[in-house]
Image 1 (tube, one colour):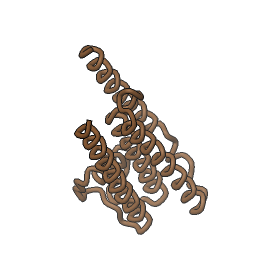
Image 2: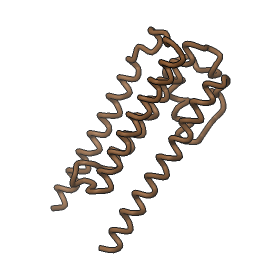
Image 3: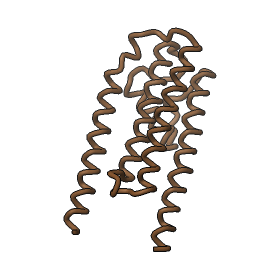
Length: 169
């Protein structure tokens, strides 16, 4: 049924777009600037927990896509939304870092600046207008770059495996 497949694609895209909008709204509402970071240890632990949670979500979406794609309600759009959630996660970290140490990231003053910085890292554009200055900010940006490389490697492997399966079928 061609109409059914098209309908499923549209539903997946609408759901993905809704998730992107909802996550972006939540990002702008997070009270990152109201509560000071309790300490270095707590910050590192929270960062690690957040990174593991986002990584797990991405791996879950990639696995669902690899195993069954649309049959299991997953699509490449779901994987992309998961990556966008990682972008928002890093943007929140950058914004919190800039609020606690204003000189740590040059020209980062607003949540939009933080989102812009995180997107430039993810897209590998790197305009340079907003950039990490402190060692901690550079470390976080390096973690995001490594995270992105890992995501790309997994995505390429999954797409390649799926294409190979289709060729064999």
